[in-house]
Image (cartoon, rainbow, N blue to C red):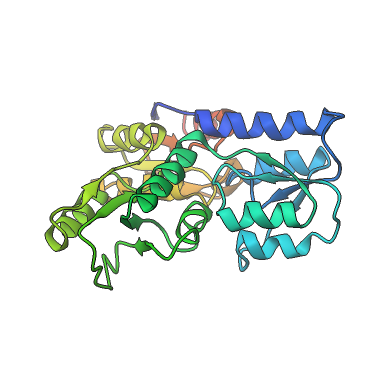
Length: 289
């Protein structure tokens, strides 16, 4: 079996920072307890379970927004951690109104997107924000102002904006191979639009590694099924014409038939621990030496 481990692997800088902040908060005597995590810190169940074991209370429900999740916290004493995906201004305001302390683990790159959008709105711009509806990073941006218009790959844009000043930007974990088409369509509709592509470096490098990888019998994408950057890696593999398999850990390939697989490439999302990839590679080596 030929195995190509596509680099980079392991956590991105934003994920490392968020995990470090969360874990340190547990032992910090100056931080009010209990500690609540608003949604998943990152999209990886293994890490979420580690945080639970440390005593952090995870407040999560896929059918609720971050603002609605705050209603599930009945105490007026304790601390809320904002996940790496960020949150809306209304979430920050509500945390303070409830008398809770706040720890902000927002990825610096996501925070930069928030700051640039806020400045452009102040300068009189309407914002076209390309994102995945329902994703927490997208939710944290689009609920900040009625001047922010969500653009998805399916709708491109469904309302006319009567403003000569338009700024277009995006969620940090989208596909680098799809977003240009959306921006081109925006430019056709609004030629004076300022385009500011904010797909992060970690996402870009991983997608390029998949697209430039050797042709193999199987591409294994490792990561949480809720993770946007993980799902986009899978999409890039399909776009390249590869047979792809998206799994969260080694347990999901125990029953997989590798008999006709002579070569694989393996990549992982930016919130996937390296040890999970190591376990998968070791397993494949045993079943197909």
